[in-house]
Image (cartoon, rainbow, N blue to C red; front, side, top):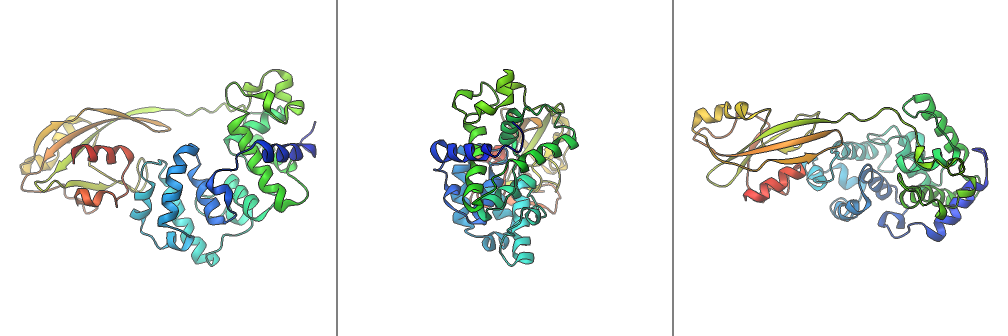
Length: 350
């Protein structure tokens, strides 16, 4: 079997029609806006979680024009809890560019789609294949696993030229005929195989339509693929949160820097230690610690955040001198872009 085997696409397409997923809301449309939104939400996020956010987002922003004119806080507020907030910021920027530069219509070409903010090559390929029947490959984590096992592709994908070679194989395997029908079905089929059958651990090879052609299965080593030597380096950080409350029950929140963890979201002031927090000028203006709340762990992809909230009653001086911050009452929190643990924290002190 080679990467040019024309039977691969036919097998995947037939399997998807008989056994693949067809109930997800973004599978019932060829609207590029809705497909794009689902693809961005599904990046590093479970389908079950996206099923909660997707309809709420569409209810608030039913089309790309509505999203383009929204405020960043409106977008981040609806995204709160999905994580990877750079996706939301790029989503907003992308909508604005689609309206300003493309007349409100998503380009039909994967090559042009990939020039928009937050749309990489795989996402561009998915939109072009699903919505326009373009012969464009995808290579997300699930599809990468399916194809490396199928082909016995054991090159290190941490090396750029090897990744490019796998893209070439993915391109060669694409359907050749009736693309308006076969490209969406084939693309969805690869995604479904990776999610339902070709699992990272204990793949269900007996249920796979490609088992007779799978090099990794013939070798008896499907779990050895894909090969990627560069591993994510995790770090632990301790953040002390100054939860400053005024007599009206409002909390002092400031916008995080434009880069880094929780970029652009609202959050209580962050300190690297308890001593640094207690040295803040608010305590010289009469602020008093009222409660050192229980610490808790918040896990990110590359960080373990140990969060230590300290509730403080404001003195006469109010909050820290920061032009990007202000007092926010409980009736205003829902409209703010807040990290999920901060939103939970505020709900506990309300």
